[in-house]
Amino acid sequence: MPWSVQPLRTGRSWVVGPDPASLKARWERLVRAGGEEQERLFRPTRSRTPRTPAAALPGRTASTGRLAREPGTYPEPVRVQHGPFDEQWLIPDHRLIDAARPELWRVADTHQLFVFEHGFLPGDSGPALSVTALLPDGYAPAGRPGRVRPLYRRPGGVEPNLTPGLCAALGAAGLGAAGEPVSPEAVLAWAVAAASPSPGGCLVPLPCDGALWSAGVELGRELLRIQLRGARGGERPRLPGGQRPYVRSAVPPRPRSVAYDAGSGTLLLDEGRIAPVPAEAWEFRVGGVRMLEVWFARRAASWADTERDGLDAIGPAGWPREWTSELLELITVLALLDGVRDRRRKLAERIGAARTLGRDELRAAGVLPVPAAARRPASVLGRREEGPEGQFALL
Image (cartoon, rainbow, N blue to C red; front, side):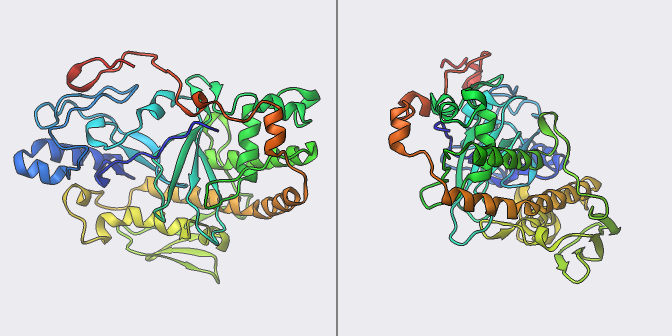
């Protein structure tokens, strides 16, 4: 997937949050303020201040004038993937975001899938890649963000972001049906199942064995089904009956801590109780960080973090019911992903013992070297885009 983009860089944490109502309250507080108070709340950076105009994000309608003078109407928040396995909300106003990566917004649609790499950490047993149908902000819990790679270079699922000739070469190597080119979706599924982290980035070996390829693609499709959570017409993840987590004691209005009782398989949110929760879901880590702990901490910070100030301090008065449903689904996702860990280990062992396509073979097939144009975004402009101060952008 030669075209990759650096993660979004918001420059200020208050533009992202797990509660959309709080984002609107933050916006209203900001636009009501003026002068030095607005400057303080905004948290200026070299890229953005309340007096910085900015182009509208592709596909979004928002004012492009200076916020201090023309705030415009509140832009409805969009759902984003905030790091691995956490779905949050973002105010889609380019004036508030240091580096919004417009090239990603241009290709985000109902056909697109985004792959993001997790930063390398020695000894980390977590996945090397995650996939989402939402726009990912690239947040990394351990502070080691990787790059974002769209599956398609253009809207509508057109022009896969794969090295030209790769799908045909894989088909000719006997990995496709009757020598036919391999589909981009199959390549993505293989990558999700077979990728391994390294200091230089994710490594994705390409096998010569058709049976090994089929096993990896089948496993990858299962991983995609779990991670996409029903997006793109799939089924939402579900554990078998008897293993599904339920709320045994209601989550209190303002839980301040999360813990795990291994003896009873119970997740504890103060006096709130959720069970059964497998230990593997509690211990599921990316970048050395427990996903359930960091998910909870981002939400409880509204009342548990006494050092938060400014717009970050504006949050929900208590624990919304929607968060409980999201937590139950996250437990399900992590448990299901851990349930295929043994299959991933066996696949890695088979790959290690198998012959794989090398650089010489890929060069002979015309796949390497990668054309420079494939590493750059396609020229995509499906609609007129408004530039700073109401000008129209020319691309």
